[in-house]
Image (cartoon, rainbow, N blue to C red; front, top):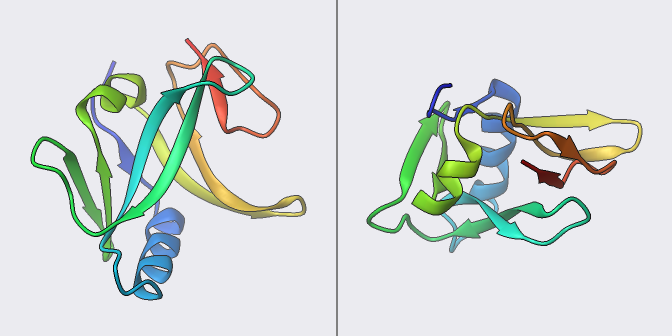
Length: 109
């Protein structure tokens, strides 16, 4: 299994748009925390800078940062942005997830 995390063109474009509108933000932090209806949940935050031990992904003008603990849960994942009838949101395509909730924000391993 790949330990890398990728960012799609759609996600990179949306991240760049969001960060451009926030004076204090430089990157989107993607993290995993306990909770949600399936055991773990994804969290998205705008941050002014990366921490020293973060993985920093830069793609098409967008910057994503992931802490080392969350990286273990996100290894091999793809960060995408979907815009469909039920709304628009970031979506994590995580090959490690054995189950996820209907809204796609929580998962189990």
